[in-house]
Structure formats: structure tokens, C-alpha cells
Figure 1: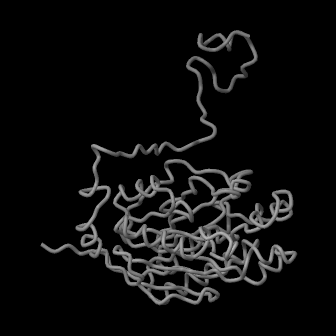
Figure 2: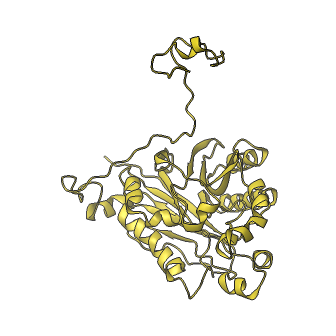
Figure 3: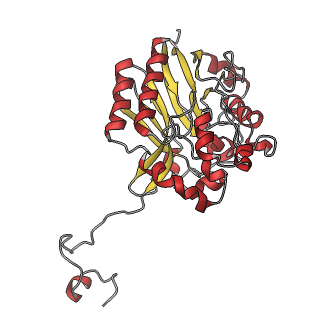
Length: 344
């Protein structure tokens, strides 16, 4: 008996966002989706918060200084179900391609670092949020929950995603590996911040994190990575000190095989475009034969992971038995219908 493993072309984006302009950013995203599909790709991954761009201003000065950009950033973050979101879904359907979009998600008054997986029919496969924003990202974004560590069945295989330094969280990675992830989209913002002064933020460490993820999880890894445009520098780097902290370029989009090998010729770090690789999911079994850390290479008698996938809803609506949910709880008789409630 022979098994027909999925084989397809995948693309990872390396391009600057249209910073702080959601409508123009969606236009550019649709162009890249069309380009990827025209070159035979069935999957395309976008960088972290590519819509409307990563908020580099939070790393350049005090939180108070960065607030000058915040309202515009908030207003140009994507709302699911909005006309902008519907345009992206329509583009995925038109070009029959699975899209993993990196975005700043706006829900009511809060923002989240998010990835939106859109199927080739334009329907939502999944919406996930970064579990824990990194360092000063917490001045802008809220947190995800355990449901965001999930892997999804698709015609292209079992597909999942993480953002940036989620790839440095060992337990979060293990949770994904244990769900038999086959294709992973790891979204990155750019590697041009604090160059020469903060090694851990640079390209060598973070491209290595994507490569190690491929080897540890025995999966294909798409690592889309944005660039920083000269226009972004002009807007945010208002003095020489800031211009020394954030440089143009920083694009290091990569696609790695389950054995860690790089599957394409990289683009120059200041170039914009797409990198491509032809994926054959049959390769995964060969990598798994050597080491499967959530399977035959594990020791569950020694170490195990507890994963709570309960959605972290902020408000849970319920009614007390015997109380009319449309009534107002302002009378002693209503309050006393449940003995567990306090007396007024």
C-alpha cells in the first residue's frame, strides 16, 4: 500500500508593510497573494503584525513618546468581519490559496498580535493570538490563551503558527509538536533593531530559532519576515539616537525542511518579494524516524506537559436558576432567590 502525501509549493513574504495604513496594506497583501498563486504556491505566510506593520515606536523611546502613534495604530488594526477582512478572504478564494496573515487584531478597545489562517475557499480555518507579548509589546497588546496553541487539519496537512519569540518558549513549542504539526508558519517582524547592541534580537539567533523548530518538531517551517522601509525610519526615527536603534532592511524570510535544511536561495535583507519551496510531506516520516520528541523519543514517565486549551473569555454570561434574566436585580426578593447570593 502506498500513501499519497501532500506535495505543494509554499511561499513566505519578505516585504515592508504599508505602515499605519490598513487599506493600502490590504491592497499590497492582495498583490502578494496573487503573485504567490501565479507562481504555483498553495500556501503563503505573512510576517508578524504585517497589517498595519510592527509598532517599532515602542522600542525607540518612552511609552509616553510612543503614544503619538498609538491612535493611528489602533484605528488601522484589523477587525474580523470588516470590509478589509472580507477583501483578504475574497483574495484567498479568488486565487485558491491558503493565507496565513500576520496582523494586529482589534477587538473593541484592545489589540492582539494575531495570525489569521484563511483557507483556499476564503473561509476561516483559525484565528490565533500570541500567547504572551514580548517585553515592551505589552504596552500595546493583550494576551492570548491556551486555545491559541492549536494545530488544524487542512488539505495541505496539519497546519499551525506562532509569532516571533513564541519560538523561544519551550513548552509552547512542545504543545504544538505534540499535536502532530506538519507545516508551521512562524511570523517575524524584522531583524534590524538594536543591531550590534542586542545579539538576541538579531538575525542569527532568530533564524536559528525557526530552523531549530523544524528539527525539533520534524515539520516544515515557513518563516516570513518583514523589512523596515526608509519611510518607516523617516516617520519614527526623529533624531540620530533613534536612527541608530532601528535600521532599514532586516528581512530574513526562510523556509526550512524537517531536517533543518534551507530550501531556497535567500533574498538580500533589504529586498522585497517572496521566497518559495516545494514541500513533500512524505519527508516528515524520515525525520520522525530519527527523533520524535512528543512520540517515541519522549519520556512521559519523567516529564509531561499540562496544556489548558480553555478559551480565556473575559466575560462569561450566565443566569441564576429561578431569576428572570430580563429582570433588574435591585429588589431583596430577587436577590434572595438564590441562597448563595448575599443579602442586601
